[in-house]
Length: 205
Image (cartoon, rainbow, N blue to C red):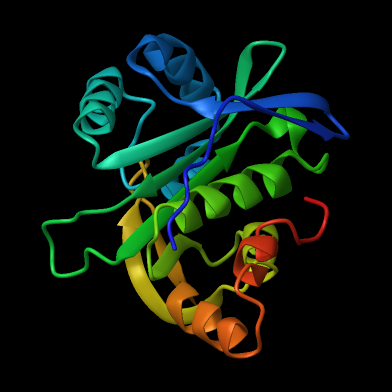
């Protein structure tokens, strides 16, 4: 059921034409510049603080190793978003993928977040994963709504689970999407390709 996702891809948004492509080692400096311009709170979307050079370098090594797949959104050659799929084939959950996503404030509310979430979701589907999860702080309601539109549902609330660089603790909500279950239900009704179509739906964001 897995399929190959080809890049680069061009998508028209209210912010203009956005290019999606996989992050490569040569992108490290551009991604660091993007990350360092993000509000501290936004970085809590990611499992690591990629605004720190040494952390980003380790992140790039994980990409090279194949443990992380990062998708960049670029406008006129500048990084304006990053969607990441994390999976560990050697863990007890090789069938599960963890999605993280951040978007520049300059393009928010112009459809870039929606397009990036759809593309990252489609990338995860193409990897043949059975379940997807995403985490965010409870006050990031726009992001929660965005992923709920893709079929994600709240599964857990983790109190004081992350601490930002200022020492403030934040609650985290965990959303999950049982891709295998939904795919099985759709196939039972003779709609085997409908799950992939879910990645094309969603509200403007």
